[in-house]
Image (cartoon, rainbow, N blue to C red; front, side, top):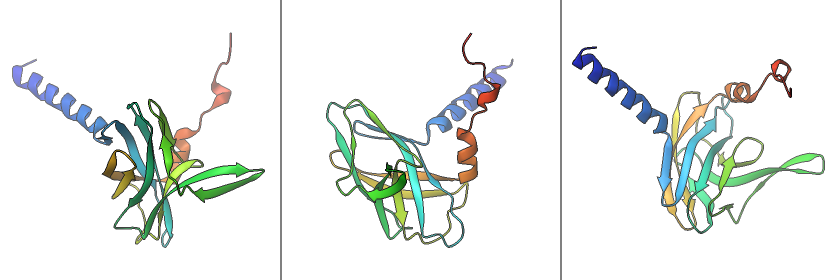
Length: 166
């Protein structure tokens, strides 16, 4: 390989590695991985925001609230079973991120609720929103908009094709 080809190859590898981590954010002891939002149908009033928040610090922190130019309100929510009924509720005291632990915000669980959105969220777009933590403060995140069908397909597994045991 010529020296130029070798340099170009190294540059491409460096750029592809950088883009793999480009969607992660850090704020003090908090590491925020892959913020994304659900694509919406036209005229939908809400969308959900998801991510993994890891706390590498020695004290717990809390995700309290947020704000976004594209939404009237940003709230922290939880979906949980109440008997046989799935219910969603706002976490008015925020969501604790334990010291040395992590919390996954995902569909059907903890999530950020973008309420009163001003336009349809389309797959491939990026939406900027600020989230606020009790101790670490505020950080602007870029939420990649992902198609709900693609999100569901990515989590499905063909267990019939798997060999369990022996």
